[in-house]
Image (cartoon, rainbow, N blue to C red; front, side, top):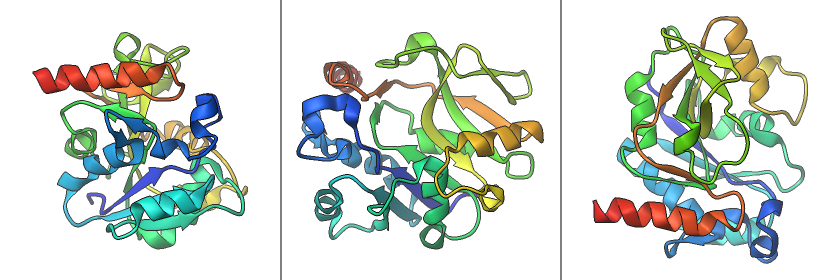
Length: 229
């Protein structure tokens, strides 16, 4: 079964962005003249009539106002941050049954569309999660080590030269088994890996993590290079 819904994670505090998030949530920071959340939602447009859900927490009213009038539903986390796993589980009534795409709002991408790349590689009969990855030397703006290694059959192993890019397709049934209100999706990935159902695929295009102020010029340069080509 192909996903029929997209969850865009936009509820983080954005503390690493310093003064840039004093008066706005991180998804409203502009990159190349457009808010990060708009870059993220652009990626969902080619998917057709799917359900689009954005979670909100910090300065939620600003993000709600920005998204008003669009075909986007809001998962409200203003009472408490739930992390990625808890946030996704809380949004399930809006997302519906079946697998979902999830996408972090704090990055920019160049073609091909990452969500479509995931869809082409998705096999729900074998996979609980399919993560999108790139080698460390192509992970613009990323700080730190790699996250995974990719086995010949496409399964993922923890540790290695590949960076998780904040985009995936995920079966959500396992979320009910986790006894915590707030938790990371890493817990679901560990369950999937133990069952041999954690897979990855590579993003052939560009990506930039916009997690700190110095990443902004890197992200804009990446988009300019893509426009030239």
